[in-house]
Image: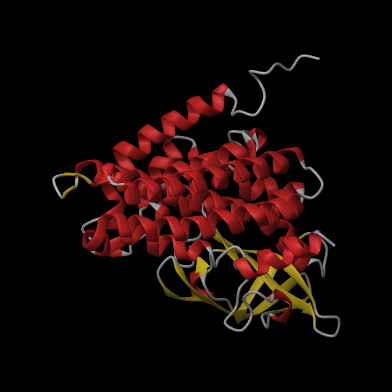
Length: 373
């Protein structure tokens, strides 16, 4: 037996070193841009370039494709660190995994060799096209279709709420391929601007009109699209959990610093028990969310049984915690918490989406309950 007490229940030292390096990058380069990114609503190309230069875009990938090969846990430690300052920038890393994991888990060797290396380098960024205007939490009701025509598939339909919609270099698109059996398949669609009508900015509504893709661009077996989607989301919802933990910790850090400086009734407000108890509960719940997240990430890296239950619990608890913590942070700041000159109102807005995307928290509760039967 080689394990020791000092080895147990902690991040490996190399992960801590990488985390500290990311923390410095975020403090120096990302945090100063966070408010502007939110205010302008523009895709932060400079941050994406920075992440590529610093190997962060390679975090979701194995070394054979040019990635870091450090696994799910290290990826989500990075997401957490970025989200402490800027949730929008953290989404760059999250989508880098979400849009490529179908290929990593279910794709052919040829697909992996073609699409993954340029994503690992940061040159390319993907989009994951599952949700539709009438099919969000119920992907089985999707209306987008793909009809085979010789050695090609012709895709028609509209997707909705798609991150990277206007800037993606390729799209993983889910479409119904067997209407009678209600079976779908997954396809890799290249960047075909002349056939892809996209409205809005990085989160938008791609419209596919007679888009042709070669048969070899199907991911996995025909009719197994739902399995591809669910197998992907089972792991990528950890990104939403990590983002939520980062948002919560960022809000705590700011509220705690503010409470040390804000004077009321002749002394800093962090000397009042009401504020102390708020901060203590915020810190405790966020720490609990982080432990559940890291546990689920480690299970993912080990491909353990029961993974879906734990990733759902991590996403559910972390996102609910982030929402609660950011509301409490606003309360600590009082009126200042409600204005855009201070970051906690942005953090609250960012926290809300973590309860919705990557599967709503109502869906996560269903997944957890079913795993308990």
